[in-house]
Length: 148
Length: 196
Image (cartoon, rainbow over all chains, first blue to last red; front, side, top):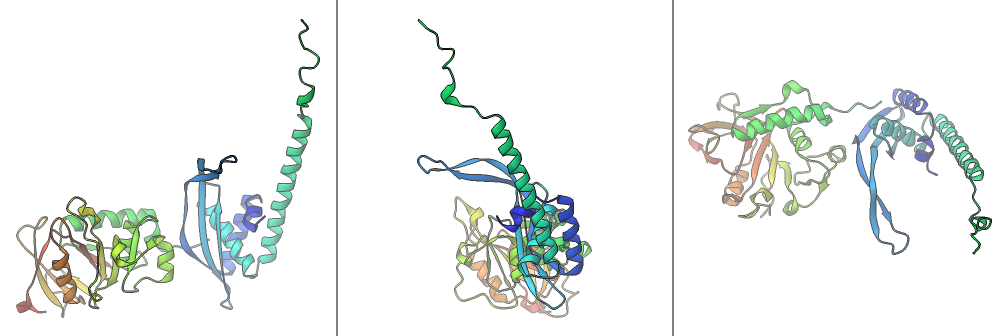
């Protein structure tokens, strides 16, 4: 998984707070105007491999360049399924800091780890739900067959 | 978290667009963006309000920085494919430029050419050097005078050559904070005797 995929699962308020701290620490410039809107989700059908659009999804995008006090620069970006462009901006700042190994990257990685933990928790929860609702289709209908 | 110049915000772009439309409907009148504190030149303001990610833009004068290009988010193409051409009016147009002029049935295909110039004045007096032009046509009651500093006259010649109504190009001349629109319907006559 990418850093962005991990950060999107971390606590949004913690990500925003970290991005605020990082932008106070470094100079942050937008390289594209942060936008939020709808995007078509492109898919390919599994049989004939034909492309099709599954539907519309909310999408927020941002890209930034972060410069530290020594003049070291790093670029970062994010495209997240969300309708808030400030969330994409916060993740883009964290992405740039981590890519450039700038001051604050350890905090970014720690926050990303919390996202990894959240993903593992959700996957475990889903596994548990699947186990509890497991149906053995091979046994269905064997006991209540209508005898002539 | 990040500070964007006001020119890139929707609210500013709406104001720029309204002023641009007003200036386009009254050729030769000056749209002033100074009060908006846009943090960008008028040519960037015009592009920001007119272009999106589907717009095809040519930067023939290398007047846009890499950052401007990223923020515009337009498709950068050669001049012959561009709907919007941006250049430096102080330099003569490149040799035999091929610009889109539209067709009889699709005149909207003509390019909008945005040129950076030094100064413009509606009354010929506010600028101390440059050229004086007399404008007439739709949107102008009688004639209107326009003083322009920092525009190579070859651009006006090129415009005359390309404009064959309804085909043609639309000119937008932009200074640091102001712009003036010269659509293809406007007749432009140089007044050499009144050289400023």
